[in-house]
Length: 213
Length: 213
DNA sequence: TAGATTGTTAATCGATTAACAATC
DNA sequence: TAGATTGTTAATCGATTAACAATC
Image 1: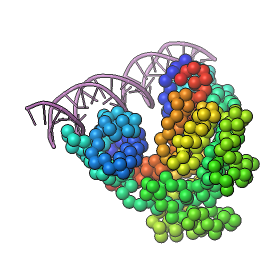
Image 2: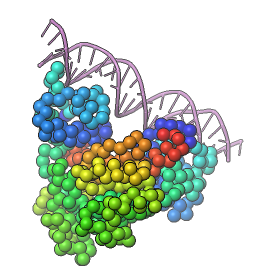
Image 3: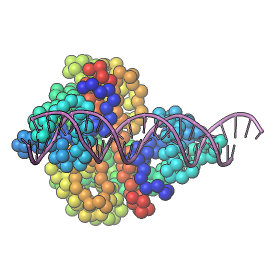
Image 4: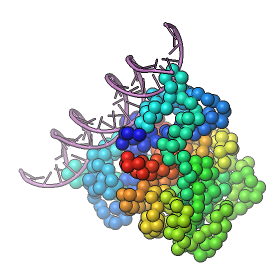
């Protein structure tokens, strides 16, 4: 790894490649070419090779890539060669859904705590977790060594929750509240706005209606 | 509207602009410049003007943009000047969360039906909706004139659900199942992969750890 | 060696930004 | 008119793709 500026699109594609390689590995495929990966995930072979080239030389000229090998490399690059403990703040519908979201577990994310400030929710069981009070947040983060926090609370208190997470030593935040949050530069943050996705769809529907797409 | 190829990034920014304009309007601001919008949402003034220029001339030279006016224009462009009836398939935790997701309602998306094939879930009340059986899906879609469907079922049956939605006349699909779905070209589809977002975070955390970011 | 496929460079494409004429 | 800000063109920047030498 020697390059500093890597397009985010490359990271997203690496994630796609790794999932595709997992499937290929399951099917018992040993060797795969950039063309086959490209075909499988819907990009160009050059794109596949270029994306990988940012991080090293993983293939053999004239042969292709060893599936298991490349799978491990891609997972390593994404930081998925270890388990990531994650805390979820907000035990509403969304928080509850996230705790049992299979897509997280499959990629090595482990929910190690769910928190809420509502006394009616504290103590309730969600899957194999018990909803904890916000007071227990710092201790659990420290004890479980969680670096990632998910915010699933109303927009009104999202900033307060972000502040608490940062204070407790969280290094990355995934925010579902429809509100831009302020965090120190040392903390990574991503806002998930589900409505925006629907708006891209409605825009495209309108374009089609008008015969422009 | 005369241009055919509009960057998706432009659409996403238009969504951001419209939210910012809503806030500005609430504050009673009447006129706003591209510089002020840019400042408010964190892009360049040229970007704001260019994004708008794809769709028309909405400002007055030397003056700026009328906030209410531009707000309406941006919402119109995004297709949000009408209400969009949406059906949700899957009454698990995620589906339940989506039915009461405030971010949808705020932007004009109205959930008009939630469906499941689990007899234990059918008939249950979620907010002000009753979970319907899958058999009722086509009729509800037709009656409520729903063009958008949300898939919140396990990956194993996601394709079947997509087929049903398409057959029932749905024109756009938002898919939360971690699986690429096949739909006809006439149907718009977006996959939401929540794990990928976490993977971008873990990648960045690893880059930081290695002093590369 | 002949055939295949990588890794990488150069060419292309597309999106962002800077600059400025138009104009309020 | 002088000052301000848009709409738009040209310049820049960055990402994708085509092409090919390296090499298995």
